[in-house]
Length: 222
Ligand code: SAH
Ligand code: DHB
Ligand code: MG
Image 1 (spheres, rainbow, N blue to C red):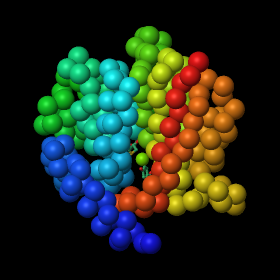
Image 2 (cartoon, helix red, strand yellow; image 1 turned 60 degrees about the vertical axis):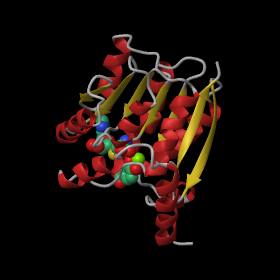
Image 3 (spheres, protein in one colour; image 1 turned 90 degrees about the horizontal axis):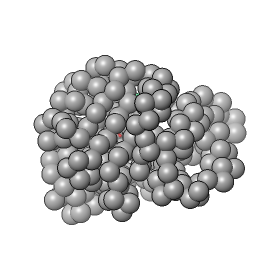
Image 4 (tube, protein in one colour; image 1 turned 135 degrees about the vertical axis):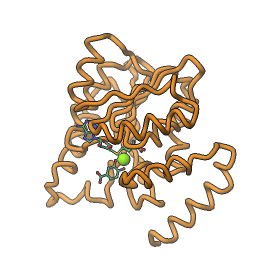
């Protein structure tokens, strides 16, 4: 197996199963034109986020790490008209591109992008009692994954989902010689998830256009 084949399979899946989901590729084109890195979730992963939100009839979603809003828009698509996605982004340039993309896709009212370091913004959101959130998608600087998870859990309720991206990283997660702060942060996240009695969790490896990576999925049970 190789990345070229994984990419072909992702295209096959997208061509058949995502064809009724609108012009999501247009968002990726705007991102490329604006010079954003192509580190969005893949199309089938974006659809998976959408399906998770639908399955729990989510109304209020929190996202940490917006980039150009590709995952944000997948999540917004799952919401009712009065739904909300609050998405946190440190780069005002990324936020500006994401706001344009959200407006073009018809989600100006639903998507609320907040600029600043996510740890600070999360604190403000908590203090303003804007939770609880039905679903949180964590996808920003990986070194802060433990703190993002704790904040997400604090602003969850029984039945909420907390999903974290990039928890496999080509298998770097099991290379104990790897001391990259992102890998260490994610390993710490696994430890917290494993010892936190309020969640039941798994992680799923994926291959595709974004290489070998995956999601961790935690359901808040108490
Ligand atoms: N969720 C997006 C991809 C996010 S990429 C998608 O799938 O479409 C990660 C993003 O996190 C980048 O835009 C980066 O600027 C942002 N980021 C990095 N550190 C951050 C921080 N401390 N606070 C908020 N956002 C941060
Ligand atoms: C990076 C970040 C992501 O969220 C991702 O999905 C892939 C790569 C990165 O910072 O390299
Ligand atoms: Mg990611």
